[in-house]
Image (cartoon, rainbow over all chains, first blue to last red; front, side, top):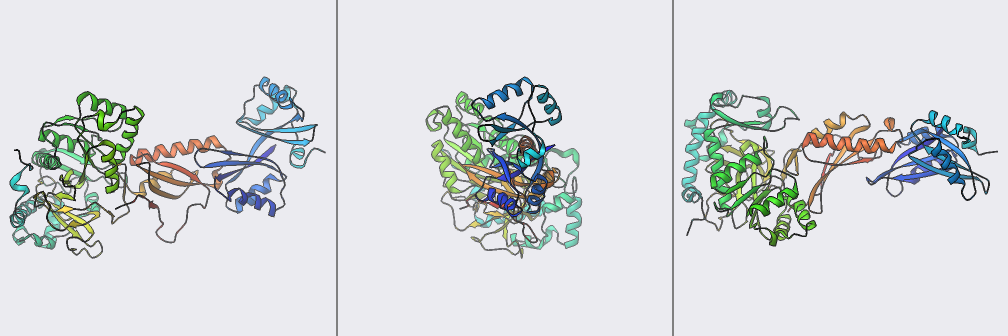
Length: 145
Length: 436
């Protein structure tokens, strides 16, 4: 099971840096991230990191609201049309998601795409059945060797 | 020429005669009060009877009454008459304890209606006017209190109720409303609706007078409302324990609110020592009813801070003038016409496990509207990283607070620890509304 680290943040100067400082202090590597914002003055920072459990623990110690949130990470080709091809397959698998972001893993070759969806197990099953390859945890956290 | 006074003799009574009338009515009031279980024992305790009252100052021999007394002796401890004599009650929501309830017999309702009519007449309202009361009806005194006064005065009344701006504007246009009563912040919102319809209330309505009250506002805010609508806006003061509206009202000179001293004895006291302060100095307003039979109140501590404006008014009325209310001697605040205790907000938040019980209420004026901003911390242990859930939580808290205090807050989620913690009594309310 793969996790992102989600952090509740007010949209204020210096607040994002509070998170990155903690990760730096504990030598946790950020693999990819995304930041959502609401009209109510706050947002959620989503991070894929080298050690999500440690990250949540250390952020919590600093008083931040951080949580592990299960994600599905899929492979796609780092070429024009790569994401389009993947999304066609995701749609045919009838999987909906609320948030998504990506990362280039090997320039011109391999990228990965992170989605936040309600029923992760069910989604994984449907996506695999449509020929999508799901990354394993060590590849997500440590890179594809 | 018609008189500028509703009751010329009473309104211009010499101070001496007014005080004589007060003494006479205070004695009567003590008679009624002695029939209630609360005052019966209270008066026996202090050993003062009507015979000991020789001048108005003798009222200081009598004990104070507090809101807590009203709550502790709920529901009938203050009732002076047999229940069959009572025709109406008004009450607070009672969410922070027992409700504060006031009972009225026929005499009390007629007396209140007359004071309300006198108040409106003082502000220049006449029986030829069409009066739209933009105010909640029901247990809240602003609806029926004004209604009876408007009818007593003889205007054509439109009991419009609160809210629904489009309908308010349509009523104004259909019936040619000349006077309207509303809380000041609502008139700001209503003006925006006029603007969005490309209407100018100064030209496109027949309004000539507005009556504003039930929420603290500055003179600057009043002047802005007057500019928006191109009319005079008069300040109204009342509190449910003293009937409701019609306690004190501005005359056309707009220089303080004449408090009707034939119906109330007014004292301004130091809230710490409870000793009287001289006219002109700010203190807590203490009031005694002089013309209420079912539910008299003696030396009731209103918790409102204000002062008596020294000197005579150019209008010729001998009843002294209250200045605007400058604050409270307890932690209650008023927003959008609703009385709110921070405790009520706390009660709602305690039932929402996702947020901590620390909160900060900020009262601010934004584009002429008073807003109540409630900041709450998203608890670490409950946070799941789900944006939809937090959005739902915001809406849920907004609705629950609204149901509790009747005013809609702006709920802001903040990070844990974002709300400053203070030793001892926490600062829960920050009032940024400018008070003049």
